[in-house]
Image (cartoon, rainbow, N blue to C red):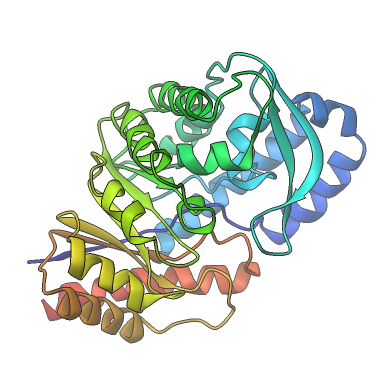
Length: 331
């Protein structure tokens, strides 16, 4: 019997009060923020916001709880933004949308900071079970960054993978790790690099004693990239059924998939809120089309959620949780 687990890929919008408070605080401390130092007032504001989004997920009834990644102003580039031997330079477009991030330029050997682990430790004080970690996948993080040190694409990807693995190795106990890999869709690797991308994901996945999901989105993977991703030692691959359900289903029909799957069923960039019944129908349709009875279906949004107004973001949390409950009732 398939178990439906309601979760998200994180990167939540800041609560409205936090946007105002942090904008004011950061406006007075730009030099500190550029250097990676945050005042006590900024730290306290983020702590309060993190606590609120954890409580909101619990109130919705999500099965996996993330810490929200509210400090990730540079989105998936954040783990590098706070690392040593990285210069944060000009503003660049975040994939093909109206969001921007500071370009991380790696200028020396990368070493783990423990930044992501510290936020998970804080969240774990409120979460008895079901804590979920979120990291950029190594291929996407390498794609978002610029190498000014390693001098070779393969060496740079290996270094990014080792960096993320060291970060993950510092995590508290988590049940699930979502590795977000939109660049596998947006800027697919060619022959050779596609196999190395899979190996890099293996490196990060092996660093945690948790179920690992390689979540891809903003479309479907090219067939060869997907075939190599199937070689990665992860528990589930994520499919964006909002952006391209047909090609994603074709990949599974043609090449199979893992025993578990993550399905992007809710649009992380559109304010229209899907009903629990619609979410269930999409799960049932995917299983019918692929002819598989999966052990676990992670019911999630297709993308990060920071694009949404807070009220719509919260309604989508409720819809995902209620869809999972509906599955339990009808099973």
